[in-house]
Image 1: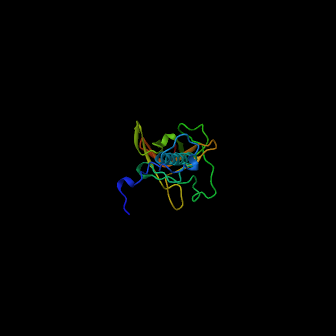
Image 2 (image 1 turned 45 degrees about the horizontal axis):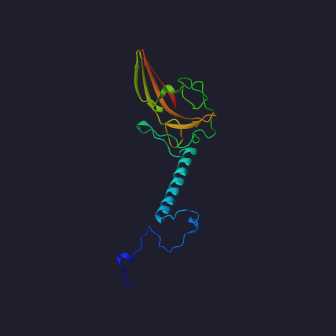
Image 3 (image 1 turned 60 degrees about the horizontal axis):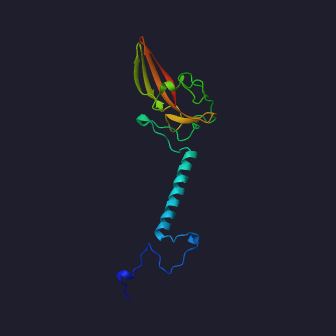
Length: 184
């Protein structure tokens, strides 16, 4: 038995004698199949989009951050392999966050002064008669894997990136290098 082109049913139109499904019995108009399928697809996309956006708002990323020059940050908020018993954060002693809760640890100087683009500064700045040379380092935290920065959360719920570096100060023939922490 062969079918002619006219005998092939149209997919978007139900047969005249087809019964209505239970799901659509309360609708006043007789919906077409494609309209129902579009509605189902749109609903699935809307629910999926909401779930994706809601989960990203309420969870922090579990991947390590990468900063300028390939600096890598911790993918967790501690340095337990270097400090297994933990430690107490120290307040900033320079920069714009000196009045805020302590977030970073170590360094001769801690604060926003040593930051550029959220990571420890890199480069040289001449402020007559003093020259400052900033260099990020990745050798201060970690017993096996060394990284440059990590996140800390203060008691007020704000997270901060603490990025390590050295700052060399040269003036009048004297040069001193300090371990400094960028708090961003």
